[in-house]
Image 1 (spheres, rainbow, N blue to C red):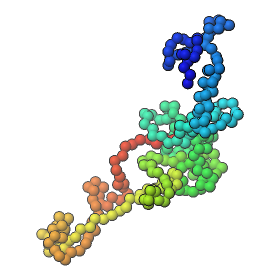
Image 2 (image 1 turned 90 degrees about the vertical axis):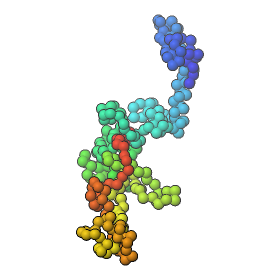
Image 3 (image 1 turned 180 degrees about the vertical axis):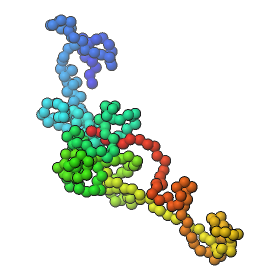
Image 4 (image 1 turned 45 degrees about the vertical axis):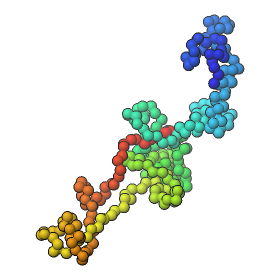
Length: 260
């Protein structure tokens, strides 16, 4: 950008970044900040730089709400437009904080209220009936129960309690991919159950009563005639087996949201 301190005669006298324009002291006094070609070029230059950076060309329409190409250029150029995922750490809700963010909680939104988000994220008429897509599909009712390509509502995915996983092709970097292949596809309860085996001999090896795990180990060491038994794992908390519960690593809770 141009150096305003050096480029204009009449300013408030402060050095950059506190330089301000000044008004004339009286009509025709000529002591106000000059509106010159240098300033016009600077204003036009920054607008053209944004447009060029985003790969846009002027559409010939005067800038206005919902049609401003400069706003579109900022979104495209810096990846901050409608439909971008965010991790929301702020205290309070986006609505209360004034942020253009919706938390992904499976809510049904009116498309007319979020037209840019709907245009950016709708999965398309060809996918709208596919139930593998758990979000960004249209419905004809505010409850989100009836999928319809002409619906006036759109359903957002519900990310609560879930970890996000990247989609891709069947094979990624020569490794077999086991994750989802469709955007918003939900995969649950896919942990592989297993048993641990140990060997034991006949009951003569035990000192009395029902066999226990310690005796099983002794029996396996002292016997040449052994059998194999499968024993479910007890984690000491959830019992055996751990039906319906998760095996997971340590997690840190946050909110996933989307810009609109």
